[in-house]
Image (tube, rainbow, N blue to C red; front, side, top):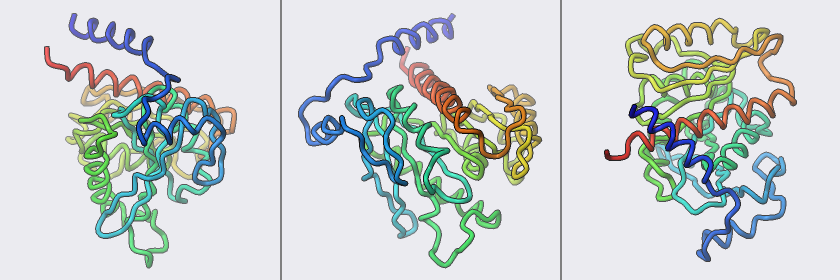
Length: 279
């Protein structure tokens, strides 16, 4: 009965969630309300729905003495916002065509999308920053990034959602298994890292696994293995199998996947927040 009650509350809140209301006149609001014309996202891609969302590229954090850039696509509703951390693949953010569409869709749903350039935390001398040998070092650095994001007054805690593509998906699934501050993870073309103990999945966050069957970089079996681990411990898991798709989905599929991914993360964040309310 409690879960049904929570579900009804979720539906009610989703139906009533404001999307395009102007903010009160504050310094933040002036910057946000002014962004009703197309703005340039980092990477050179234009915002697709500038009336609803705005970039706030000023959430820079410091990890191990190094400056880590965090670009934010935020709702036009007043903060604090439920927030998702978006993680790029092994090639870095680049033009971000696997990241920005998800960020835009999250912002439409009232969730701030923090696109983290996590490679910034590694020394400049490291040339292959996505290398496997640096995985656990990056993992430790991401714990600090989560700490700092949750400490921001604009972020509505106590949890974050995570979206990851490729290498970012591996990191996201490791975080889902090991960090209880992660509400949900959407992992595209990734898998569960082999160093994560099976027992860690016993309390893992809900996950959405999306993977192409013709992926020659990260085989589809890595998603099958992750699904098996989540089901073995009775944890919530959904799988989207992309038949005939390689490591990079086609543009039309990316639009659809961005919407479905944002739906999943926004609903899980909202569910966790409602479930944590005092009864």
